[in-house]
Image 1 (tube, rainbow, N blue to C red):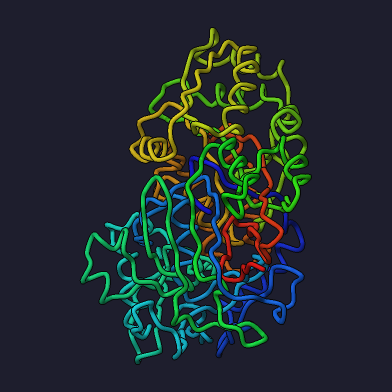
Image 2 (image 1 turned 135 degrees about the horizontal axis):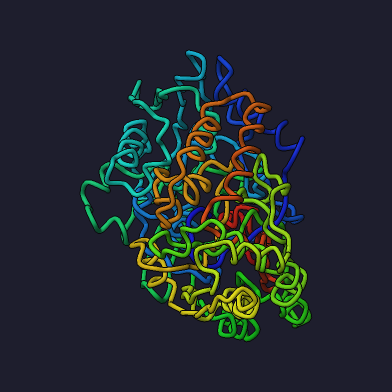
Length: 540
């Protein structure tokens, strides 16, 4: 999950030595090696304990989600509601396994790395077809990459490392990079690198936003913005499980937009929906005791923060921002709002991504906060407004706690709840003073999320805050081109320290995934990236 100003999820996974080891493996696969790299495993790492022999095919899963789909044009969206759906509608050249633990080939069966990591040749599957029955070819891959690389694409940062690409033959696609690029394989596992039908995009034009032709396990049968999306099985989807059953197992999935926590939980308990995301933290145990329902908490690579626009003068004062960070009691928020199912955010890098360190996080220190305010240009304080998500008990609960704590340094906070679509639009248009931000990682490398939040030319104006720091940007750009994992780790350490000191964010909480489903639903899970691998789910 990359860009979001609304709900998402995750906790803690890889850090320290384990992260460095895994980075080394991926770099050696994607950048530093020569010769052919196989696609790591064919198929699907199962997400539950159920044997594929017990699988029953068919049925419709009704899934209550908290974020609406805005568009199915993968090259022109950055909101979580859309990109999570995209990952079930489109394929990429590589992807994470359903359990989110490693990268494997998707449309690419294998790839060759040449010229010291500057050229990668992808060998595509011959049996992949779009939902209209047409074959997925290297021409579609080139068309999709070129469309995402266009200056008009809102996700052109995804492929910023690409210098050029070309079709070698029908099923061979060659990419030339500007220079060796450490996060490249992770980059092309993102929704912005989805392979779309060249013919369909040219024929449909703007209609592709609501009537896409799928390359993945599901296709879009019906789309009612603000209500639901109906996905149906792509009959031409190639992948099978180890028993020979073709994915997806379900006939259909209905993504029902239910942003209000109370409504979503009521529908789950009444049997109107089969599964729901974002079980309120204070209801995890009680929902789990309801007959025929199961609740699950699992690690999430996610983070909640408040982003502070540089268009509002007080937030351009580093002493003010640091004071706001010190006066927030994150442990109290974990207890009061998350009922213990979360951790204080200690870094801009999401906990569980490569190179995370909590060494530079803010502690709770009211006296230090007061001293910083006294030394700032605003010793008497000021008032500001934070945009939150209407109906979201977490964001608004955090806001209430912050109101009390910020009073200790003379700052008055007004909470402005907005519907998700409006909040996202206001954020993108940079028409806010402060905004609730919930980010999740879409892969294992911190590159894409850090580009979004904290790099001036990273594609989102430093999280739409318009913050610029030449030194921070220069260090970050070095992390992208440094393929030695130890040296890259040292650069990320320097960068995290600097970002925590200077960037216009109040770093708050690292949450967890929490979801629930009926006991006739099997292999339902949410990845540490907050994505939903719905093609492996089945109903008994």
